[in-house]
Length: 306
Image (cartoon, rainbow, N blue to C red; front, side, top):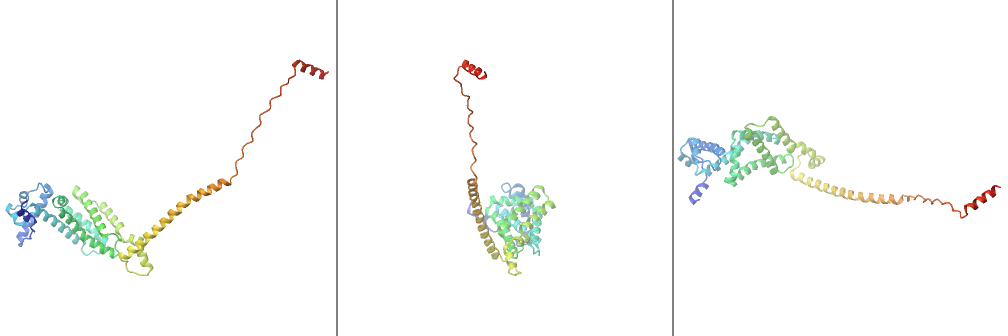
């Protein structure tokens, strides 16, 4: 790439000063959204974009120096448009759970109106990785600020706001892919209700009130104010230490039980009398053989009879 081309690629895209110029520029961006979404970045051409926008080829270079410039501007504009739509949907809502529900609906509606958003943003990872990261980081940063305020106000559980932000963004992103991108329709009411139920049970203050030790501590002290995040974390750390000590004691007690049982078994065995062996039976005596001659035995018998 020549130095001149590199300067053109990095040149900032200026907004046209006239209404007509802004309209023409927007037509080019709208056409680029269709062309990049259908053809992909590599196969898309400036000629195709200008043809779709119904403007002369030379008009393109009045607003953008090259194909990558209009692609980068398109990703940035889509990000701005999404954040603006979310802000409008939230409006004056103050409850965080209601904000999440309104934001989810607004996101799905925006994706349906800009079905090529998914393909374009995913292509950005290979065209300009910094642009790809920036798209999600900007979306998450405003999300995180709102979640931090909700945690401090006690509206949601004391969770890491950045982790929650990216987790919820992932839920909404794949929900839109499953229904809007693949099926060209909004998710069924049952699906949306299941998602909202998941959010309410995962973030809702009811769980915080029931399980957060810091809230119990504040009530015991007679304070009606909501505990701060630092107070909740301190109590959570103390609770974790207590659980560890209890777990260690339980393990030690469990280790002692088998040894005691083994000792008791030995004692019981020692106390049992030895089993008596059955007396051995003497063999029966054989009759003593007589050494007297049979004839003599006969005479003796007759003599005794006489």
